[in-house]
Amino acid sequence: MSRLTLTMTLAIFLAACSKDENKADAMADTAGLADTAGPADPGKDPISPGDTAVSDPLPPPDCGEVGTTPMGYGCENDCDCVPGLVCYDEAYPGAKNVCTRDCQGGCGEGFICILFSSTHWNKYKDMTLKNLCVPACTGLGDCNKYGGIYTWCTGNTASYWEGQTLALKGHCQVTKTE
Image (cartoon, rainbow, N blue to C red; front, side, top):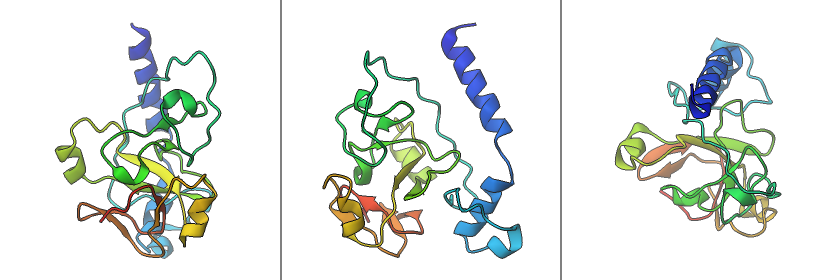
């Protein structure tokens, strides 16, 4: 069995084992249904209801040196980012060249999860991340602490990309999307 096959098998096994009530609670909380699904875990970031998309595991980059750029900050390539993060360079312009990761397991304090729809996956076939963590915000001032790379905060409203909902809470965007 190749190393990649073993790694992917382990990742799939761990992902299957990690499906618990916290993810269901987080999904219900996003939809405003927390009262019917039990209390949401405040340490977990909400994920859109009914969407169970999990990104394919990405192999770690062969950088030679450990990256030092934390999540939410600008980057030029995967090697800039701390281990476990990637420098996002796919289709979505709102997080272009930002260190981020898949939302599985929650995004942590100060970040929210945005989910791409099947419309996006079908249009952009090379997308490997089906969801990602981005800095949360209520105003552009919240985004400025990440080195000035963001030009827009979605505020306290839902955000969209190509007419599809990404998140129900405010988050920073490198380029405004609608």
